[in-house]
Amino acid sequence: MGWLVAVAFLGAVVSAVAVAVFGAAEHSRPVAPDPAR
Image 1 (cartoon, helix red, strand yellow):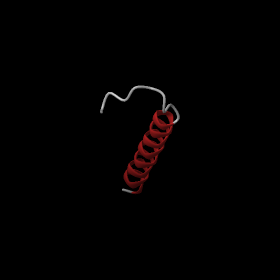
Image 2 (cartoon, rainbow, N blue to C red; image 1 turned 30 degrees about the vertical axis):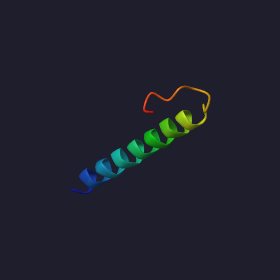
Image 3 (spheres, one colour; image 1 turned 90 degrees about the vertical axis):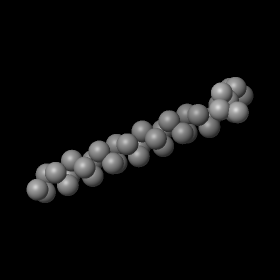
Image 4 (cartoon, rainbow, N blue to C red; image 1 turned 180 degrees about the horizontal axis):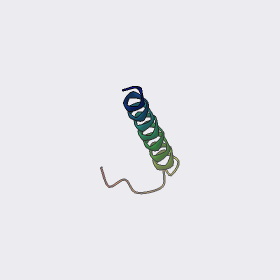
């Protein structure tokens, strides 16, 4: 069962990194129009 925990942990880390990178990319362009507003 150790491998299952490792896979879940790696998945969470990859997801967190992807969200962080996406957020940084969005915040690095303040001149871009924000469709959410």
